[in-house]
Structure formats: C-alpha cells, structure tokens
Length: 219
Image (cartoon, rainbow, N blue to C red):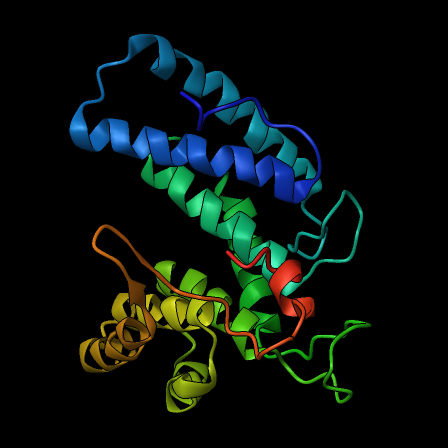
C-alpha cells in the first residue's frame, strides 16, 4: 500500500509513481494478490500517470526532466523502462509513444553527454548511462550489438549499477555466456552480512558524489 500512489510532479516524479504502480500490478497477476481495495485504485492511478507521461514526451520522442525540456538519455530510458513494466502489468500503453521513444533512444545512445559538471571535457558518451539505455533497448528486442560488445569488453570499468544493467541487457539479448561472466563480476563486488547483500558506491576515498550519481539518481 505504501508503494502505490497518485502521480504528480516532473517527469521523474511521475514515472517514480507509475513504475511502482506497475510493479504492484504485475505482482498481482503473478501471485493473485488478495487486496481488492488496493487493486481497485491502480487503473485510475495508471491512467493519470500515463496521460501525464504522454504529455511530457517531446516531439522527437524523448523525455527531459520537465515539460518542454530537452530530452536526455537517462530520463528517456527511465520512462521507457517504466512503460515496458506498465505493459507487462497488463495495462495498455500507446504503441506510438513507445515506438517514438525507442527510436530516439536507439538513435541517441551513442551521443556525447554534454553536462557542466562532467569531468570529461570531450563530452564523450557516458558508459554508465549507455548500459541502462542498452538494457531498455534489449527489453524491446532492439539490442545494440556493437555497443553491447564494447561495454562488455570494458565491464571492469563500469560502476555496479551500469554493470547490472549490462548483465540484464546481455541476458535479454540471448548472450548467455557474456551475461554469466558479467554477473560473476557483479557478484564479486557485492558486500554481504548474515542477512543482506549490497553494492557500495564506487567512490574513491574522500570523493564526493560525481555528477553521474545524482543525475541518474544512483538507482
């Protein structure tokens, strides 16, 4: 009950309401969730959220942080990922919205990231963001094979969030051997206790959060 809610705010805030609603909807289908009052709220919440997201989409198919703001790789990937989950939960998603978004993502996944605080003055593509976008494309049967190969070859340099995204992208793309090797690397970074496992932030001693961690919400 704490996960679902009525969508509001910017693109990221709206998607951050829609996505857990979708997860609960998908869970309800899988385990036959016995909570009629909760499930009765989902269609209204989902419809409101989807309409907001449709309105936020730019003419070129991308999403930015707010209505009318320039689209970017992370926000577009996040919205598309959420829309994929919405559809998997059994709710209808406008096909053209997905198609336009996926087309933008495929066309821009290798574009340089221009961001004021980005340390790389060449504004090169950001592998950590590319890995997440790659997973979203792979979930839509559009794996970018050359990029998958490049990221796999440099997997030791990826942070844990990106490596997890790459692992799932490879699995979605039916690259089982590569996916297993990437997963082995990811599991090797895990920290664990008697009751939990986690992945620490990949920061050097004394280093503050770089632009990437807050730009992508360090998800």
